[in-house]
Each structure stands twice: as structure tokens, then as C-alpha cells.
Image (cartoon, rainbow, N blue to C red; front, side, top):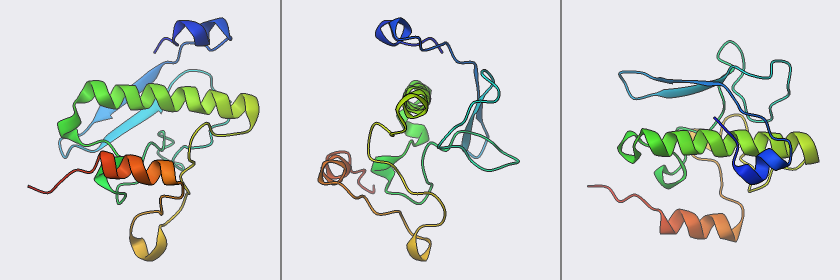
Length: 127
């Protein structure tokens, strides 16, 4: 994945990523470039895939197969940029998702008013 031109000018490097889509529609993204770098949002070993979303979060806040592969790749690319911003600044550039199990096994809370508004705007209604 090539960085956008403005990011390339800031020294962001291309990323090699392996994306796996399983028959049950689970997806995984593995970073193949830049071994030894730290990642803030990565699943624990043995997977080590990027932690892109929590499967029990509201569907408006995660990728679903009906969104299409191009949207998934956009999420991966954005995540890689956010990881590099975090490495450079120590701050995640948007609302940061908590790690570990959510309260009572449900979804993690959406903390900021901006994210709550986005979740409402992008709500996926049951058929």
C-alpha cells in the first residue's frame, strides 16, 4: 500500500500487507513490512494481525462483507497511517478504542460525542 502523496513527502513508507478473507467472512490483515516496529493496535500472538475493530461493536463501527473489499482495504490503509502517526507523536489521531474484553462481553463504549453522532449516522438497520 502506497502512502498518499502528502504523507510520502513527510517520509511515510509503503507498506506490504497480506489480507486474508476466510469462507466464513472473517478477515485478517498482516503487516509484512517494517519488522521490529511497534504497533498500538495489533492482536496478540499468535495472530499478530492488525486490530481493526471489535466484532461485538455496533455494526456501524466495523466492516461487514456487504461493504466490499475496497472498503476493507481503505480501513487497513487508514489504520496503517494511524499507526505511523502514533509512532511519531505518541497520540492516536482519532477516538482510541479500548483493548481487552468489553463490559459484560458487549460492545465497547463510544466515548466522544463526535463518534456517537457518526455511529448514529452510519447505523445499519436490521432487515
